[in-house]
Image 1: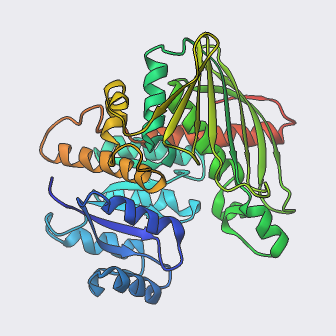
Image 2: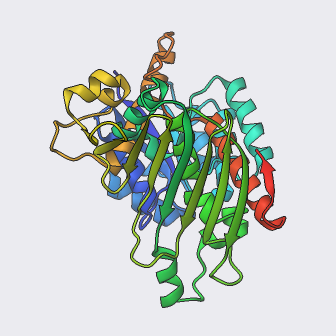
Length: 383
């Protein structure tokens, strides 16, 4: 359990998600942030490094400079992995450069800008032998892992339908207060083909596939841009899964009063499971023949049912765990996998339980199919 050294690209002063990555990675005490290219402005990168207590010579002006200089350091001193927390358009070139230089990578989603880039990155990860993680946050929650185990064990019967919704309201408020404000998420040059579906819809799709163990095979989508001249900020998608299950996915970023209200219903032949991200420590199980069950995170019966949920639980029942811990769970499994490989051991299934490059490819195929479906007149598109 040696402490791994982390480098970071992005996450400079004022950045939200980069600081979340740092807090999550360090939560269990086995990761130390020692280097970074935190901002495209070298002076601001240095300023962020000072705040974090990082040596000035390891606060770099560019990711290329960081990769070059860190590669020259002895194995015990250089960074063990690099966390990428930058706008979408830069994920692929940074991840590619890191892997080619021999560094493990943890990347924000979506993984790339195009399906072609995603396929290339998958080949590169396989060729390099390095560990690649993708931060689809919500599969890191213990009760999501419990839901996955219930479905896999056949507790709810064959999955028939999935309803997953992800409403937010922040973009609508931005539009009302400053309609001319340029946001990178709404800019196709920085965000890619989609804003809403690329930012949060892909999280909902990943959650649905993770819990059910099924793959989305076809989509029929209707996307809307309420911010004129920008990428989509609202979308509705019909889903077909392999095995015959069907579903509905809705995502919006212009819902007044909505915060981060991701939730999912999985309807099986026998039972229904329900999980809300804003109330994440509880999993509801509904049935026609039995009273409603509420499974509560941290209780021994949860770990007994799902070792993955037990592994990802840090505090006793009644002491809520949420967003930062879900991030940390992915970092824990990601870094444990790095350590296992380092000593020549095969990572366990529990250690490998984090999103990776294959999830990144799935995400890009989903986004691409949704955009093509909407632009093509709301028609079915295969993934």
